[in-house]
Image 1: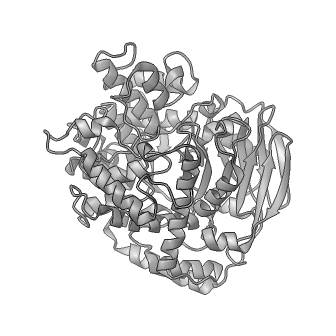
Image 2: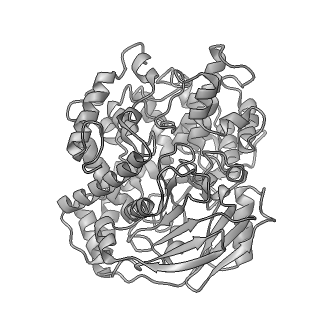
Image 3: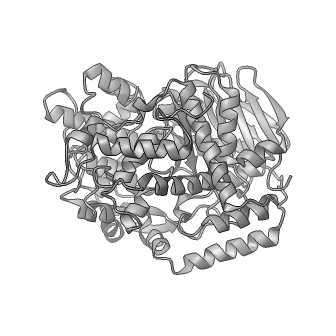
Length: 585
């Protein structure tokens, strides 16, 4: 084969052993790499009903045929498992500079199973697999851990994936970090690593995967760069990064604030991209072989956090701590961002949980939690969450547990146990369909459907025809996640580009229609995984508040009937029955 090695690595942490296995070409043709391969392996490897934090769960790391090539936007890896946060299908992706190092080990995927009896980190190369004692690293934050394992391995060009104290303490939304600030952030992958006492993975090697047509890949890369040269979206990312969305979402009156009670933040200018550029030292940072450079290395110049430096904050962190928690200071948001990165926690879920307690406190339903705008109180609570202690112990178990324990089901905002990102579906109704049907919970990245709704491709207030356009975006970005491409290239990489890139890397010739069917096969596979775990149409439901509490002076709300219409259309177009069950199951 071209574009793939045709091999995966299996690590058994219980036995501290490894094995190399081959996969047939038919699997790659049907699923490609990345999300397709990871989902195929999940269905094959996991027994239904297992405890996500038990040795029976498996963590699968996968790359795609674009990884390590000249194609821009391809420096990403995917992680797949059963989520300890939701109990359903889990996927998470991260950029930075680790994916090319994974590629150089000579494997298309790594399956991690079992659990070590003491902390361990694993060094994976094209020559060997080494299990190292990590007792001296247990308890260290992610920055210190990454520095330590890379120094101990001592290989130029190596990349590391690590967890922090949150993963060690089995916080259900702990994430995996690399390059300090890049995160496989959602669904609790760091907790899966922690449950296996796996502190880090280090990758390096000299393996090279042969491409079918390097000249065709070069031409495809040139064409994408040419498209990006004057693209306004690219320029916005190059200038502001994702912070550009703060202004965009407030202008659209769809920016969640004060735990989803408002859709405009009265002080949004203070936490905007313009304020970031004016008040802080900001330098562009790019993933490997990427011209978008959406990362912003930010340094606080004055005040109590002077000297603090990190890549960010991203829009979703600003929305969660700034909008939802009412923290009107970028300095404090950056500090909380840094705290979450060091501890290894998803900032979207963390901010949502804190804001839930703020709103519950405001309504007199809980006591002892910080109020809106209390940045110092939030910082203390974040640390308590990471160490699962005191008031943070319950929150560390995730929003479903919090809501059930404290009687807050009517107030808690989540789908399947995962909180939404910063796009209010009462205004952008297609995002309601996106959140409801996502196999991992309220996900914004599976189709980035806020883009067509904000850009005028389709009326955000309508539900007519929305499922069909949503599937078009979901299918194309599913193929993105098989390659694996950054979703920020969605305007630059269209179906014809994907056809050329797949042919250049693998030699296989698909039509756009065939790729759409391949994507549908992968989406259905994720649905099959959740159906095995007991998911039904009732799980494809938005939180009650989105139906019952309008925003923007009562002008914007989504009704149950509107969601049902979109769900019916989506299931029918996917070929599933009216309960969302694929045929033959």
